[in-house]
Amino acid sequence: NYPNPFNPDIEGHTTIAFVLDQDAEIDIEMFSITGAAVKEITVGSFRTAGEHQSDIWTGVNGVGRTVLPGTYFCRIIARYSDGREESFRRKIAVVR
Image (tube, rainbow, N blue to C red; front, top):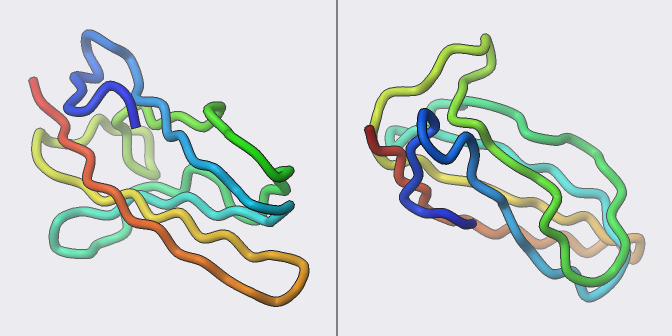
């Protein structure tokens, strides 16, 4: 993702980028350092093979409140039509 770290008050959002080797359904979710669910960015969204840079996180939780500064984890799950599933995790730092 870029920028990382990011300040929601200054940059406004961080862009979550990833590359798929074939078409897939994507879930992108944010978690706290303790593993608590923070925000679903997208669930079950179809993406074509290739590079993607259209998903963003604005630093808010599921009820629209700005999260506290700290480290968060972004989990991307790709479910391919052949039944294969891949999961990627990234650290995202929120600063103020």
